[in-house]
Length: 306
Image (tube, rainbow, N blue to C red):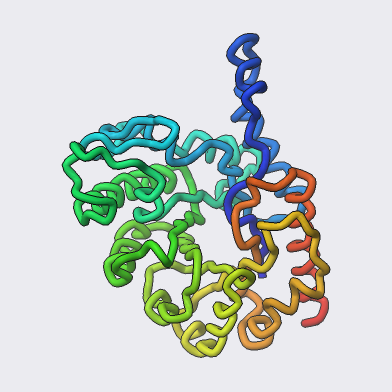
């Protein structure tokens, strides 16, 4: 079992911090935010950390991708092309310096459907609508470029986050995953939403780790009935079992009950535990306690198995 943060962490700098940096200089507050996010995750006992996603990732892409404009809501104005420079490698490098091991930093990227959903689409862009096949294909090439750059920078675990509700063609999505995850050492796919009806198809995807929410979508827990198929496919399941959408610090027993059947039927090493969503919108102290609960959960389960 491995404890990991899912994605974001609440150390993003405030507007005042950014203004003071612009006015007086000093260390870039976003660099500081990444370092603080990583340190908190390490102190909470996370074995796999993220850079905290302290920058809005779609806005960051918009600054580098030709055909996009970084506005309040990023705009796709023209045909998209692969950028000349990656968008996430810089923060990944800062995070790896804090861990002294790039294998302990999980890079997190949006899937093509989620990427497009966050953007406005100019009617003159050349794309007919947000689920335009050409648009999704062009976005997929951009994400593939980013993954290759992260991999070349030493990244092992790389996670794609996609919404089940937004996937219009699951077979195409699986093929896309197989393409972008080529040569990635630890490919991770986190699916938001109800995966029950699609679980067996998702098992065929080229992702070593399949991640999903077992709190807001309790029916997702029923996929344990496919324990034999999970084992045959040699998959690791990352279970979003700590509630990132509430300030409440839940009792450990309550968290444990959410994954008890998985622990009973799967190998200990075939389970990861994480928050069920980004922690970015929580108070920092509460977010830290949420991660500490994951670490405590892992210890508790390990002691029971001895």
